[in-house]
Structures are given as structure tokens and as C-alpha cells.
Length: 339
Image (cartoon, rainbow, N blue to C red; front, side, top):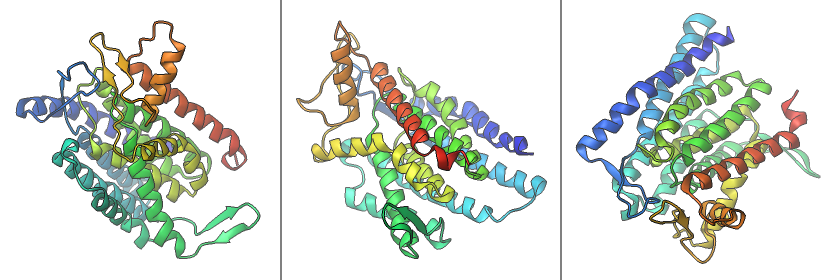
């Protein structure tokens, strides 16, 4: 019966496969295009905000999952939690699309207003009192958090995941690929710990992201936009909260914690882009390192004999780092995952 639910993943995959090329074509017709900042002279204009296709395919995929559960396998109490999750994603998708339309070059939404809106997006999980209100701490043991969990930790988790996921971006294929890796790992954790619903919801997003990645990888034909980065970050937070493995979520997010530290070092004003050269290679944009993309470029320049580093190589190194972090997390929490 669980295999029947994989139809929802197929729905998300097919919808993205059919719709995304049409979105790219339409964006080119109406000049809804953005510059590809890591290409020499920025000559390539690429279809913008393709994340809207991914989000819509994801939502329809999840709704098909609910339909299968309701009409074939039998209704269960998780539907309320799933609709709360969808509400969070939809609110953040609207915020992300608004930010995209205002344009990052013009500042988009102000930082304070954006954070306020992201906190607002956590309300659906707050009102249903999501998650377990207890946490295991060294020395103190099991601590009951009570209403502190939904009123403080849930907004903090969603805000942190959403905003930091948006920091590590700007390279072809990076955001989509990271989403596939992280959600793939968390879906595995959810499945192993008995959270079949959250595992499938993660796979539904992956089904859409796989298609998107092949259009977004270097050289990109479409960009994700904040609508996708916000939605992926929020989905990661929701799965972690509803699946009750917050500690694992924090460990998986180590690359984004490091990215945030580096971005703060640059007072949140330094961009992740590098300086493209005529031969397609990249050079360091600053004297210091202000992001994992800069760090990856610096490491690759130290390793490669010809010192020529290309955009896809920077992305691949970050992917490798994220996979290592996931494997490390699996080792650290193996006793609680393989139960």
C-alpha cells in the first residue's frame, strides 16, 4: 500500500517536466529574465522565478497524496498537520515571489520586514501546536518546554532555515541540488523513524527538484528565485519539526550555519557571486572569504595545477561537503535513526 503513495512523487515529477519548459519559453517571450552573474560580461539572460513551477507541482503532488490517503488507504489525523505545512509553504512562496518581483538589485523586501513575514509564516504550525514539546539536553536530561516550543522555537526554526537557505545561492544548480541532497537525507531519516508521511512529502519535493535541476544546472536555462529557496528552507524546517528530529536538522544545516557566519563577517552585504573570466573560469571577488562559494573557489585554486576553476566545480565541491555532513550526521545519530 505504501508503494501506491509514490504516485504522488510521480505527479510532482510529471507536472514539473511538462510545465517548466513552458514557463521558460513564456519568460523569454515577455522578457522576464535575470542576468547570469557568474558568466563573463553577464550576457546570458535566464528565465526567472522558475521556483513557482516547482512549488505548484509540489502542492498538487501533496494534494494527490492526501487524496490517495482519504479515498483509498483511509483518512488519518495527519491531514491537519499536512495542510498546516502546505500553508507555511504557500505563505513563504508568496513572500519569495514578492521579493523576486521587487528585485534583489533594488534591495527587494527590507531585511526587517522580510524577517517579520517569515515569522508570520510559522503561524499555521503554531496554531496546531505542532511537534513534541520536550528536548533532551546534556546534564539536564529530558526538559519539558511547554508552550515555549510552539511560540518561540517553531518561529525561530522556520525563520532560521528559510533565511539561511537563501544565503547559499547564486550558482547554477546550487539551490536545487542542495535541496535534493538535504531533503533526500531527511526523507530517509523520517522513514526510518516511522514518519512515512514526512518522508513522502520530502520525496514529492525531490521529484519536482530533480526536473528543475536539469534545467537549472550550468549553463542554467531557468533560475529558482527566492520563491524556491524560501520554500525549500521552510519545508526542511517543517519536516524536522513534524518528524521530531530537530537535532538532526541542525547538524544537516552545518553548511548553512557556516555560510551565515561568513555572511555576517561581510555585514550581510557581500554577494556569493565570483568574478567571471572570458575563458569561463572564476576569480575571487574579495580579498577575504565571505561565503562557502568563495571558500570552495579558494580551495579548488589551491588544489588544481592550472588554477582554473569553473562554476560547476564550485557547486560540486559544496555538494560533496553537504553529503559528507549528512553521512557524519547519520553516524552521530545512528542509534536514534536505526530503531
